[in-house]
Image (tube, rainbow, N blue to C red):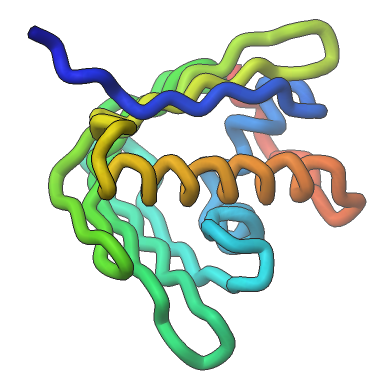
Length: 154
């Protein structure tokens, strides 16, 4: 029997290239990739298949969580697959996260799937975290500070 996976879906207020770009640039990830909007993040990444990323989440001066992993699939601007390991309130190692983006007029349908059972304590905690991060992404995409990528993603 297949274990259920955690899934977050959202219609985002930006075109698919802009949404994909928010996940490929470390400086952009540092702006939105946190569970709580009151937190800050420092992200680093080597955005290519086999490259690694690391996101350190902070509340004030305290590190509250670290997520890291490796990019398994990079298919601009519609699909991104990476491993996920996290240290913090709940720890997991070597999970798989898939982000799929689909154009919907001037918006983008985001589907994020994390291979954690949403019915477990760890799955619920990560579900809350992903909902927070996607909400932050939506706010980031609405902000005026977003800058156009220097090269097209298609």
